[in-house]
Amino acid sequence: MLKGIPKIIPPQLLKVLAEMGHSDRIVIADGNFPAESMGKDCIVVRMDGHGVPEVLDAVLRLMPLDGYVEHPMSLMEVMPGDDVKTPIWNTYREIVKKYEDRGDSVIRNVERFAFYEEAKKAYAIVATGEEAVYANVMLQKGVI
Image (cartoon, rainbow, N blue to C red):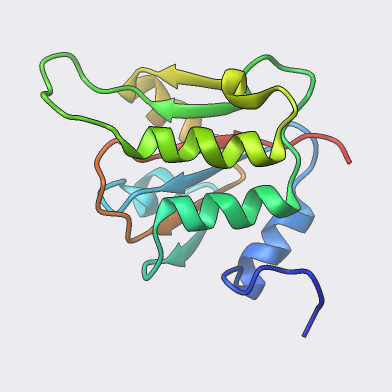
């Protein structure tokens, strides 16, 4: 047992976060994200019983965002023609404001297929059971 570690963080994810270096990226993926195929060259951590917001909150308690880039947090952009609402993004904005002095200005939207290409280069992908669509988040680690 350790003090101060959010209970939701499994040992494998704690190890991944500790191993990541400055500018490494981690994806917190919704349940529809192809985590295993995108994560062939990285570490995939399964957290199927959890949603993205609770995992995002726990990760940001432990990991700073990159202060050397304008947008160290990326969201997958809704595809043109997809009539989808993304209220979960408002939840993400509130979460990031708790941990980031720059507020939600650190967030950018990335076109879906460009997001996939960036995800393939991530250090790790956390596969959640999140049911909201377009709920994927990519974080770029900063310096402590």
